[in-house]
Image (tube, rainbow, N blue to C red; front, side, top):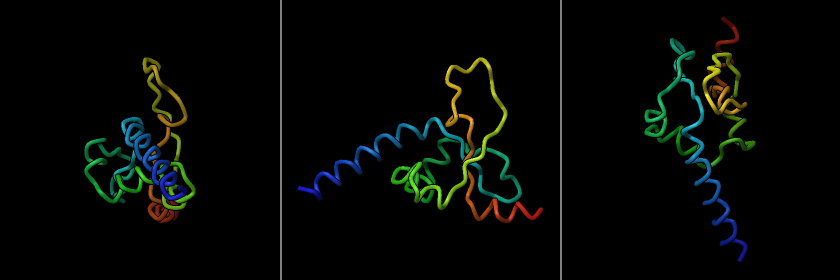
Length: 101
């Protein structure tokens, strides 16, 4: 049935995003240190962020809440340098306020 297929697809997205969480950078989302990265275990243990990530990473819903900005701290010894590993995700509202600084 359609409902079962939708549920299975949602589970696949959830599983993939649960794997990808170990390969992203996420800002602390605090105005006083937004330039620092949240540790993966801290991100995973923050339900608000982790639930949104697992359910909607890289979807329209994700990008209506979060903004991905590139950063230049490239370590040439890293094997996996790509657009995902060179992006930091910020809450759009935080970046809106920082734009006026």
